Length: 201
Image (cartoon, rainbow, N blue to C red; front, side, top):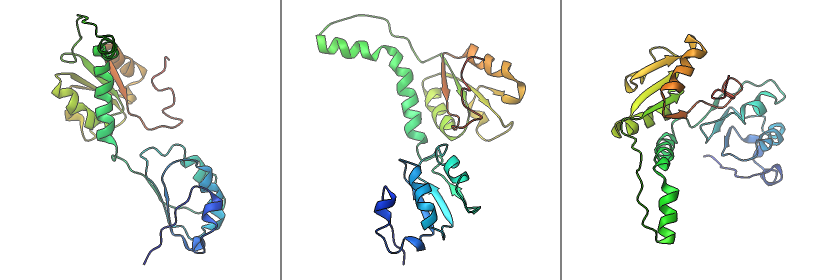
């Protein structure tokens, strides 16, 4: 049998008599300080799982915890890729002047204007993991050209891109992707190595 303890603060968890027996910690988001507060009370933990795909806020907390325990940390990689793929398309379609259409509807204005097309446009992906590989086929369905910038040569999914650039080729490779792209979608994981990756050099 297993018992599930749910809480958002140390005070809430301290009410559970079985707290010292916890073996799995599931982090559903929120304040990572709760993990640090709980740590002295959950000495039997064997596994930490994050329900989020990104763990950039959780990793520093875990690395700073006392005790020197090495515990596996897993995340929900891929769980939200379709949502983010659809959002990326919505963001690109936004440039068909959707706010203007909404405003015209409110004011009952017949406003003729020319909309741009996604067809024939180029989208560049900074990072070409699960989210980008879920987004690329949707872009292809609109007739878009796909560029990818990634670290690993020959990694899965490269067949989805019309052209692939690699970080090992230096800054010029990324700049060339920017130069050719009408839209840029950054799907890199958060962290010190990727901070400001899309900023001006």
